[in-house]
Length: 210
Length: 210
DNA sequence: TTTTTTCTGTTGCATAGGCAACTTTTTTCG
DNA sequence: CGAAAAAAGTTGCCTATGCAACAGAAAAAA
Image 1 (spheres, chains in turn yellow, blue, orange, cyan):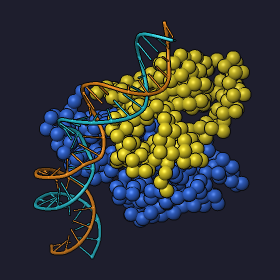
Image 2 (tube, chains in turn orange, cyan, purple, brown):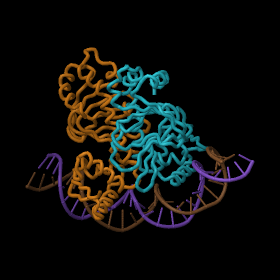
Image 3 (cartoon, helix red, strand yellow):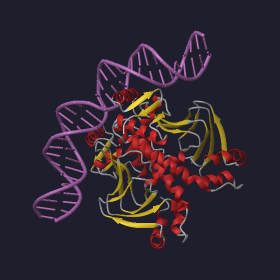
Image 4 (cartoon, helix red, strand yellow):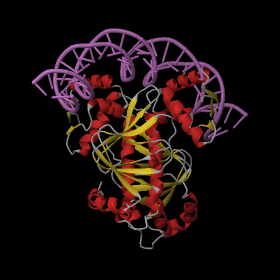
């Protein structure tokens, strides 16, 4: 996100001056926000990391999305169509900025610099979100666990400019992220190792094919 | 899309005046564009309907996305991470506007009204795309065919303000959209009918539960 | 209209992968 | 540090779902 440095510059000044915006801190495993009704809430993660988590009626957990520094999230991005619980949970200690989406369009009276900046860069910000989501869909539409894993590894290897990289998740969470059973995933990972597609030690994966 | 009427107003004037933009027509089943490399291409569907289709290495077809009037698509929204074919194919006769994303940011010299309008409304446009994609992810992360179908039906029923609605796809395409096997889907649909969850005649579905 | 193609609906079979139930290893925390 | 909790790793069983292969209905083309 090429906005990040600007955010860093403005965030402190703005949380002091801008009344449309709230900054809160959360400890590990605290619920940051729940997606329930249309509050038009928009959030920016300032520090830490968090997950958008859903539990379906069978108790299956899915990591719908994983957020890092300067990622944005909130109900505006969602049609709340199901009655599944959908909430954002702090993975580590977090700082989060909250504001209403409306206030983005109608800048606050003080003509807060941060708002202006955000407004200007907002397209870019969501554009990158679209890219990310498309990648996600690409992965999820793959039919087999093998294809999902290899697809994900390929993306990570591209992102890291190397065919060796660290998984940003625990394996347990990776399974939830790819929406597959953990033990089945482990099984398939073993197969991929045995068949020489990947090498794996701890959370480090090396792609061997291509 | 609340921009649509504006698009309608401006599109004709702009295709005549704006040199950064191209309008093309396509017949049914013609390839509109292929996602290969980073051309930063951005497209708007003016009329007709089209699909973003992927064939994976096993020959499985997936409808990654389905486009209708005034939907936007193009490579900017994609990280081309896989070597799978990814292209947009006309489902019916189509008219499409092509332009480079850069030209959105740096408006053309004539200060083309359409550009300006698009720039202003671009955030809204992508925002709705994010919402759509999140819905898609929500569906795809569901673990069973039953949950995917019921999830999708629920969304359609909300969208139509009625628990009776027409499927926007053929059943064949619906299966591709949900990334599941068609015959397995038919089987599950039969079960849902037999168990009294839905009623179905042709492409019309009625949700009976809740 | 007739022919051809596409879509729908159904079924038998095979298997990928979900589920449960463990043990072992690693991490967290008092 | 030691205890407790979480994550990694493994395996057997079983069913949901993919695949193939149809026939009939509907739509498109000729």
